[in-house]
Length: 415
Image (cartoon, rainbow, N blue to C red; front, side, top):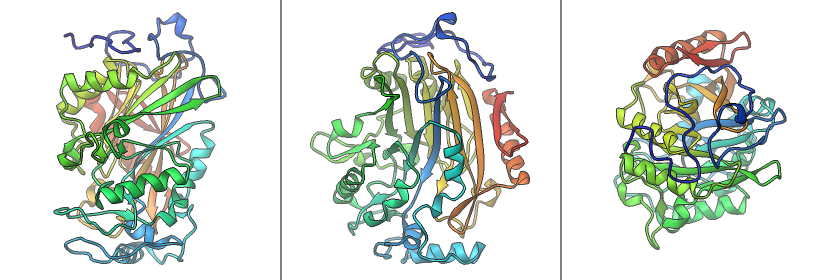
């Protein structure tokens, strides 16, 4: 099979690979050939283009949960820390006192206004914690996350359209913890994908309506064992779990794309959200690059990767956005030391605009934020510049660079 795939499923590739111009594109799909099936007129945005707000891991358990109005039991099943309030105290020691309880919007800080100012958009993030009162801790895990179901207002505050759950922490408190997580999210009206009480539910994509005209954005959530997901967590027939990829082979990418694109209708946009890779470092494994490219070859429009604690380099493949590692957005890591050189206190919101008719990337603006006192503040110019340089250095091999704009945002461009 060629490196450009077979085009199975509803969507198919539109042209050979290569670097692309990221300047805003406003030409109609008819003048460029377009992709079959998952293409069509405007989605979600008043200017005819689809706007996506993407972010990496959101961990509202442990110390964050303890700062919120309805904290759960603070007991932890970790080797070195036995009380979740310790992480709250570490954050205060690092950056100053936190008036408790905080409002549910507090952990998002300036990020809320940044998302709102982007205009009509679909928001997709990875929820990396269980939402449960269960005390059935997963055996052998060094770090476990849970938040109280009574604090779900913190997730509602961000108005996220799709929470992805295929990750290495959603089953930290067993099958009953997962069941309560799914029930709690559903009761709160929060859409989640990537986990379920059986295999079909875990692999089912979310279909988010756009503009009320029948068009949708399809979001699938999967995980790879390279992120620390135990293989036994894979959902099966009658067995609760998450959507775990069997491997990162071409065949698995084709199967994943076929499963998702088989649900496409005319005008739909397909997003695959994948939890993979190590916590630290800028190098992208060859297997990850090949897997992401095979998804795009098969007709997926966006690959949304996460698991790393800091942002990783970005690729634009055949005109389509591949985020290999978005980095963390919300967590309680402020007082934890050891990897300062990666500046994991600096977080990014990814504001992507996709071209009407093709799902190709028109522009990518990234908003740098800084974690302080369990909230997000706008990063200062020197911090934003540091991120731009780090992503430019690491993105050179992928053909991308990042510029610092006068307004403090970062902008992706070809290297």
